[in-house]
Length: 271
Image (cartoon, rainbow, N blue to C red; front, top):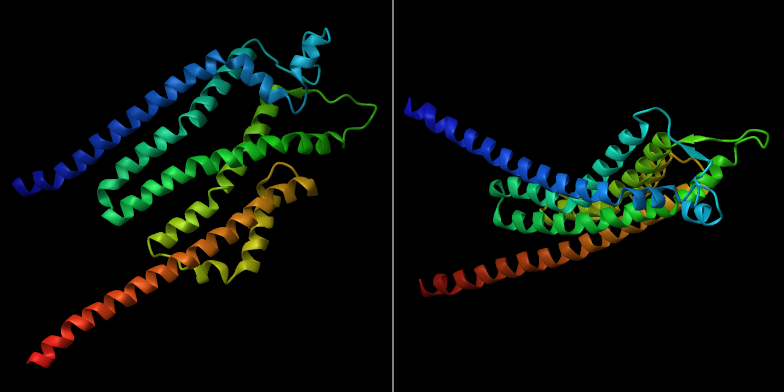
């Protein structure tokens, strides 16, 4: 019975720790959800700007933007809940990423813990950079896609569909910008060397273009170039940094081996 209890306790401890981390993450998302609910009007104006400048429309005397609409009795409430929830998840990302690391950290070695901290600290700004780029290319993508609308037909867009489109672009580009962080993390823990990263560079470039073309909601060439260019640049930067890290690591290993050999040599002479 004692052995069974000893085997069960670690699992129960892990479950308690997981529950604590999930609860803290949920509270952080809930707090950010409240902020998204409070600033709902400002967020809607920002999200709608690539299609219609609501502020300019209101200043000109129009009460709304004719290109976007909400349907149904529960449509406005559903939209506000969705916008507030997604705002909460994105804004609280640094906190729940840290909670994820804090749950995994006890199982890591000291060196891997430092690498995990570096990963969490770098993943958030890179995701923010990607999300910002995704938002900035939205006007170009929407203009190109709206260009396929016949001149005799007006294009009315449900805001729910438009929000899904916007979030797909923002999340896709934000997650794509995590590529160099993953490559450098694998290099720092010794899983990948810099030469291994850079050697198949042609395959990497083709893969980046392929996934941008396949997963991006936009199909116009300009948006594909704007999305693929930074990813390719970050890939080469990550590979070059990994090469520098490998050289320093190899020099340190050689110096350690030389030092240990120098210590053993006098002992053998003395004998």
